[in-house]
Amino acid sequence: MSLGVLTAVTARESARTFDSTSGSFGRTEVAPPAGYGVVRLQQEFGASKSVVGVTLTALHRGLDSVLAPSFDRRAYAGGADWVLRWDRGAYELRGYAGFTHLRGDARDIDRVQRSPVHYFQRPDARYLNYDSTRTTFTGSVANIWFRKTKGNLLFDLQYGWESPAYDPNDVGRLGNADGRTAFAGMIYRQTKPRAWFQNYTATLNAFTEYDFGGDRQALFSELYGEVTLKNFWNLSSYFDYQPSSFDHSATRGGPSMRTAAIWNWVVRLASKTGAKNSWVGRVYYGGDDLGSQTYRLSGEISVRPSTRFQFTATPNYLRDIEARQYVTTFTGGGPAATYGSRYVFAKIDQSTFVTQLRANYTIGPDLTLQLYGEPFAASGRYYGIGELMAARTSTLREYGTNGTTLARSSAGDYTITDNGGADTLQIPNPDFNILSFRSNAVLRWEWRRGSTLYLVWAQNRSGFEPTARLVGFGDLVDSFGARGDNFFAVKISYWIPVN
Image 1 (cartoon, one colour):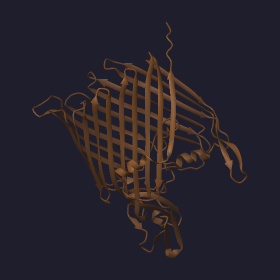
Image 2 (cartoon, one colour):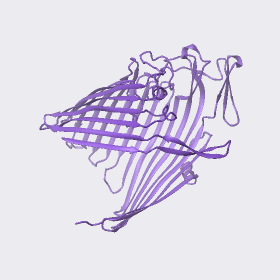
Image 3 (tube, rainbow, N blue to C red):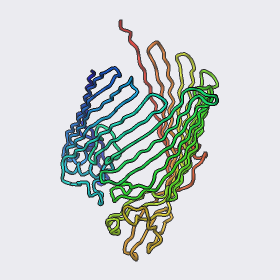
Image 4 (tube, rainbow, N blue to C red):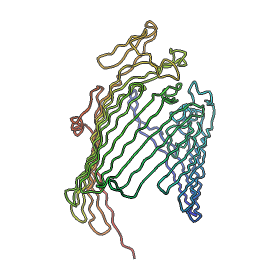
């Protein structure tokens, strides 16, 4: 049996402010004092070393009337988990079940309900109880997973849920609640070398998710294969398919929207792992029934000319054309089919080029130099802007047609008119071109046994233009000259021998 306890207290934090009218400086509180607590109890038992455990977390904040709408006053989370093994670990039954409970000001709980994690305000979500006056918020989570882990034929079966009000984000992380999920997978593997391969694996799996209102959010199936050849090169590929479903988050708090049927195909070839010089190549292609297309080329090259120096480059180029990219929402003036609001989407043509560069050089037994750099460039061009015609569809009423007008200024901003000019909509230029360069250089010197000196130089450079053009290798080079910050640090540790 093991027991762990962790507590922490954070102080009140404030920020300096400036009033442009009076020209005076001041201070305002931005974070309240808070106390955190975590308790973990775990018990191991049985010949196969099965495990059961319990975890509880608590958070209390000392809020005043200014910060009460922005923070939960109390947040609790907890649950039990288990890993039951038998037949010498050949079979496992894993799972967990837990809860979250939030308490706070009504304005704070309303903020949580309307956040992207929950979107309780969705006008077509009849199964949700959106209440702007509530002061508590309680949800549950559970998952059970049965799998076979030994032999040539393996399988996985899994089922779980996150209730609509489940929210561990005060002491954890959750992107979106409100889902019941199921997974089934089967793996066949051959680990004994044969005439032309060392081993191979074939996998077939499927995943689905439904929200608590019964709408399917995803249905995903994948066929995967991998083989290691006699020369230890590795070849793998997979094909996946997702039929059309619904997305209750696509309109950012509005009604559900139909998603496209999606397919993807990937091939990867890699040289022998651990070789002096190695490489990886990967090709990705995908599309959907709305006209989206994705192309990606990526890979890795690793060169080790000597035992003291190693260089690695990981380039990645992506061209992604999405047929339904969310732009904004205009409340009021929309059709009854979208509950009176306009949910604006567009096609977007994105290009991204990023490369990770790493170099390690051992100068001597006690002196090493490590370098890391990541030049990054991305662009996005929006076109075909329109509004969702009806809930639970993906059809757009494209602006500039169907009785609307569309004009674009020299700055790239859009002006749309509808209903004979009675309604005028303004959309700032959404196009972008971004450059970024981040790097770290670390010199490590163990100047005496157990005592180390670190010299660190980090850069964070970035640039932005409201234009749209495809990025290329020249943009990666330009990122080195972008404006940014330099950070220097010195760290020293001294070992004091104590007998």
